[in-house]
Amino acid sequence: MIRPPARPVPAGAVYFSLLGPLTAVRDGRPLPLGPRKQRLVLATLLARPNTPVPVDVLTDAVWPDDPPRTARKNLQVYVSAARALLGSTGDDGRDRVVHGCGGYRLTIDEGELDTLRFRSLARAGRAAGERGDLRTAARLLREALDLWEGPPLNDLRDSTGVAEEAERLEARCLTVYEDWAETEIELGRAAVAVDGLRDLVERHPLRERLRVAWMNSLHQSGRQAEALAVYDDYRQLLARELGLEPSPAMASLYRAMLGRGRTARPSAAGREAAHGTALPAAPRDFTGRREELRELLALLGSPDERVVVVSGPAGSGKSALALRAVHLLGDGFPDGRFHVQVRREDGSARTPAEVLGELRRLCGVRVPAVAGVPGESTVPTEPTVPTDSAVPADATVPAVSQEAAEAWQRWLALHRALIVLDDVPDEAFVRGLLPRSGPSSVVLTARGQLAGLAPVHRIALGALADGEALELLGKLIGPGRLRTDPAAALRIVRACGALPLAVGVGGMRLAVLRHLPLAEYADRLGDPSAALDELVAGDISVRLRMASGWQDLSADDRRALGRLAGPAQEGGFTLDGAMEALGCGERAAIRTVESLIDAGAVTSPAGEVTAHAALYEVPRLLCLYAREREAG
Image (cartoon, rainbow, N blue to C red; front, top):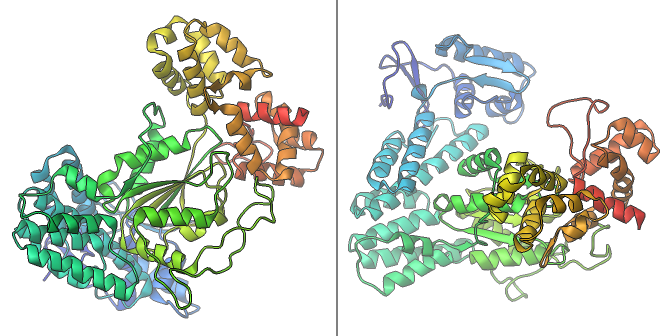
């Protein structure tokens, strides 16, 4: 049966469906989609609508093992067929299928593709739920689910590439079904979700959120014995198949059901208590970063993004941005939100084994015993401590247990959690901690770029805009005092390099020294020899943060940064200036500057420019610290 589109399609337009077998209709009549290879190409393009699809991806979808020499020409034929099916141009006159450096891009509207309509309805439903309008949320989520007719692209899953796209679509559908079921349970209408949840649990027996919703729906329908049996069956399945236990949230729900009779529906507070959460308080003085916050929220709200790196120099507000986003995304991660600090208080890095141990403890991940070793066995791993870090190169780094690592990966594959690993020293440290599969997401904050990680999405932070920095200062000293001398206030934030940490410390200092005129404090900060001495508030010292970042650099990078601090302090430096300061040739200077960019000590233009045309910068306070070290 060909399902009609969710909303009217213009006469003559084609409506495609992926949430089931691949189908297309025009004016209510099904369209032939050609031979299998042509349908594989069409399905791959439709699975990534309005996005360039690399030629290699299309080739792997059609010929996973041994593509013929004519593969590219054959692809052109299949793409031409798709173009003919769609029509050569859209309503706006643009080509519907174009080829560029990124691959083939198919342009299609929401009303022409069920997955786009599904995504739109799901977002609207979640937004209604966040506003507290649960009836509207349930209706919109149900409309989205009505588009789902079974395993997506179930007629083409013998292609590995298409199967991966199909599994991604199915995971998205399952998440929306869980959202809908939880909303109906909260509305007191649990009975409408029971049968559908049972069927999905049979198809996805290890998906814990489905199990929890099924337990709740049975319990709220007065079927307590069945609800408890769902938990017991799941506990035995996990132990038998994976050597794991149900999450603390699910175990807590089970104990609560044992201790009470049927209730009308779970309260919002009860739901929050059932979800694991281990987060510092949300930053109260978070200011600016609107575009970056919007981008981070969008990425973490997408089921396609698993890892996001937030990078920037020391004091740029990476942790504050990550925590702000995580606190705003509570409902999207039902299996918990967790924050782990990767460094100790003195700035030295913890070991991967320590961090993994804390993650396991927070998430309730048990490591099964292995023969001869009670609880877990360890396997040797190469040290991940940089040779120039605070830890000696020959220090013994505790090995990460193979069983612990695998147990962690199994937990990630089965749960939708959001994890912040804060202040990561390098790529090697976190590779084994990142999800290989599953719906969980991880935010990494780091001073360096972590360029060796892929695929990840990166958000780079620099200095605040003047207006944002002044807004932050005003929150700390009061807007009235800020208005007494706006010119001096601007000098203060610029002397702080407009970095949130430094502006915050300066504001806290001024909040205590109420007698100190802004102009006098601006003069103090403007003195390069005194600025770092002035940026201390209680036990918070900007100099100590700069020292931690300095310690992360290799010995060669420290020497280079010390020599570049002079020209950098004068408003940045060019490649020619770097060659002169470093006393080396062009290639060596380029390598050195790019190494410092990778380490987060030097910033470069956002747009593409040649190495000779670029103006490189070092944050002012890091410059001052580097000059101190060079002079000392």
